[in-house]
Length: 366
Image (cartoon, rainbow, N blue to C red; front, side, top):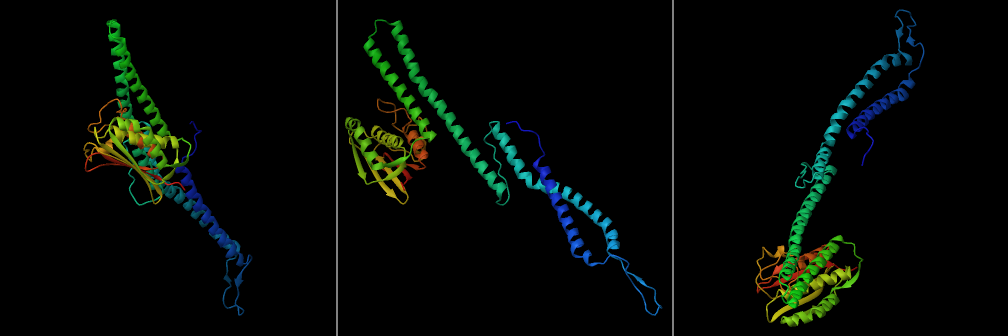
């Protein structure tokens, strides 16, 4: 935005300090004039000795005092003006020094360098509070940009794979016209379905990050039952026992997104479970000020240090390989985004006997 040039804040503060001193000096002179000189009579004043032995004494009147005092008052006002300008310039520079550092950091960030931090020293005040808030914002922006870069790189890699497979299959069909078209079409269908699933997951993740959904009162226990009913055929196919327990746990948010969150957690627990006789347990409940959804599943052992990375896009733990139902590696990333969009917390904990325990805590409905 282009603006017309104007005086700097440094200069305006300097003039303000100097003006304050001049006004204060003028008020002091006015007090002397009004409350002191007004009681001095104006005219010829003197004392005489009735005996005539002593000479008369001269007593200055109001005009004499004004003539003697005015030049010195003018000199004092001039000194106050100079002192106000010089001292005001110095004080304004000291006061604005933190703001100059913040401005320099802002310009550095505008060039794309988000690693710079102000780290303003000193005790807490308005400038340091602003600098700390700016450093926090830069840290979040840097983390968000890094995450987006990793996400873009992973997404391009994941999307390139089905497209490359499709191109290879089409090249094979063109060079070998006698090849069985049924098998080719089935493989193309599977590859295309995976690309569609990945695209829809990316769109859903973008929607969750947008945080623009309609809010309503939602019961997490009903969502858990609905998700379990939808995924029951998949669980039976893989020999996984799904158990839903708990009571009413109401929160406020988007029902569609929270249903997607619950479905993703349950799908993740079913797919990445034991091949047979696996178990998934869904529990809903309340804590002071929170509605809690817990999903536990049996499965392979997970390292505690690698568990937090499962919420990053396209991250898979041990045994989390692509399959017909393995998803596209965005399930827990979508869960994390939906949780953050609803101002909740997401905790992933490896179970001692193998498998994963996921706890989603959302603000309780008022």
